[in-house]
Length: 231
Ligand code: NAD
Ligand code: ZN
Image (cartoon, rainbow, N blue to C red; front, top):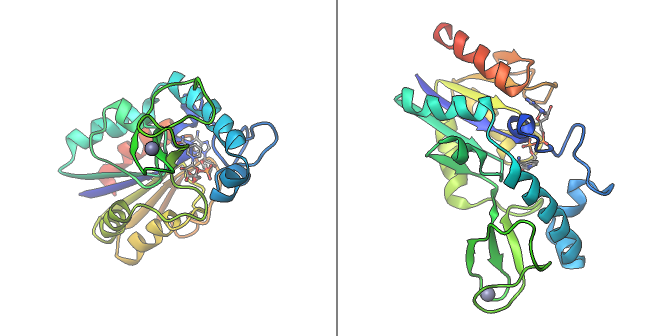
């Protein structure tokens, strides 16, 4: 069986990382849509970096949960298994997943606005906000994809390609409203895959999914694995 899994912020909720939608996602009363944009950064880089610094500190203390660990195990067990994530927290890799397609970048990477250098910066909390480029002293930005920006080409085409040739497409903890990632389950379905959703809430994917598991990610994934043989 060819399995492709798409994860969103909901899979990391049990690790204590707030999602963007749903409860607990606010920081100082700002909505993520007001901070995770190129316009917000251009207007107030300090404010945007303070938010990232808060998120980076939370993530640095977080551990992968059962759902991340089960997916890492599955990678070794199935002949054809691919993991695509919208998350930027790196918890799949921390859980032991080796092949992870990161559609929205990684919160530990930074990019220089002057010399374009891109590198990992694990300091949390940051000593200086906004942080400065190690090579040229220019201003750094998080190397993540903000609302309104394009996704990395290679990762995006790989993800769409995978969606067209899998037997089961499993979506865990994503609101499905951030595009183009939100199209992936629909592409999979059009190409004949069975779509399974694990989410606490109803999403635009729920109605077309072949199976919906209304549980938190860890419990839902355990149930899915039990049912998988019958799929
Ligand atoms: P989202 O915040 O839009 O939606 C989260 C979804 O997870 C919701 O549908 C919610 O019902 C569900 N959910 C919440 N807790 C859950 C749980 N315990 N188990 C299962 N489902 C649960 O997140 P998204 O769809 O990933 O898209 C938003 C964007 O936010 C992405 O681009 C992503 O990069 C970014 N983001 C990433 C992180 C992270 O890396 N951990 C955190 C927040 C946001
Ligand atoms: Zn630089």
